[in-house]
Image (cartoon, rainbow, N blue to C red; front, side, top):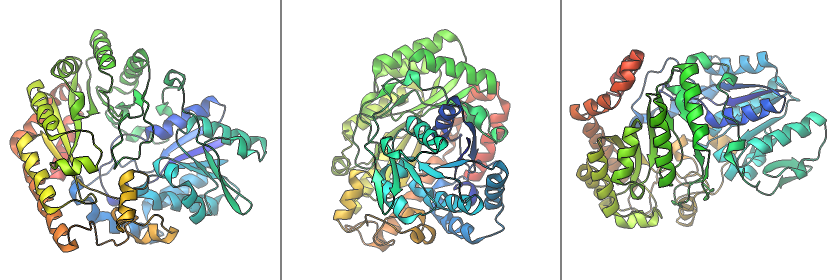
Length: 493
């Protein structure tokens, strides 16, 4: 079968920078290609002419995103339609995340309009937790792949190719059958990540639009053992790809695309300290001369580990701090303490690795005092970059259900609401009310106040200089990256 896998446009529709390529979609496409299908991955969100990077102002652009669906001559939607027409797929797969669900629904409808008999399936985080809702509200979507998509998608397309209708044997699949929606049992996870092929970036039909650094996105593990109340990750057992496979992947990407800066997007790279040491030693022994970044938690770093990581080329670490309030951390089920946060901040500063701290406000039950405690903690621990987010009630996590209980969140949405509601207000019972503990006008003022304070903090020259120094090796080997970063800096400023 000719299979077109589509990552819907979102950031591109509002002119924002969007990093990397759709790793999950390419991973599924690689398995399908090995099963004998002709596969193309179309990243409709790949933006080769971005103009904005101030993500704290991102919601201010959402209205233009919604307007795009009513613009027949919008060049991005014209391109999507032309790609569907020209590629003439036998099946279309679409990734769907809550924030850009409207784009996914729109592409499904376009596909059915152009190729009425072409089956459409979706997968991704939103599909996994909202399969029932998706099939109820979107007649253009025929199948929903839940959870890990590689094996389920291969079996789905195999059944379609055979012309059979025995979809009830495919675990991890949801579909319509006469007048009901069928949800097959959750599929057992892949037992050994070594059996999952490395994502084939050659499947990307707009491959030439990516920078070398964009191609450096990899995952060395799947799953997270923690249970943060705002996170929809259901996979608590971490599975690891063999270190030698990860090193070989890095070598191939560097050779093929000239990539010297990599991003390891594991949920938390440092869960297994022994494996971190094994990876760092192997990478150092290979003398690949690359830089890399990863995600971790404040309770998962030690001085010895950070020293190993720096020697192996780690030049950036991203850490979820979340809140300066012990009460809020408890409601988040974060499993970390303020003491651990302060300790980790000292370790990271001593290690000399550029680090970003992520903070979150607007979670159910939060008070004005809690919000200011978060601001004060940011100033106290002094991260190299402080990212501030406002909680959005995406379906799945425990915090979503707490919001429903508090009357802040509605459990379901209708199709038209995705086209008329700003994405940061999806699933809110009242778009104007973020919390039941702070009046809307007061929270809006607090949000604006903190965003401005965080932005001023990040704009300090010493912080910009530290960021540039952390990437000096990249600039030396790839001068074009310096030009790109300078353009981003100007846009962000």
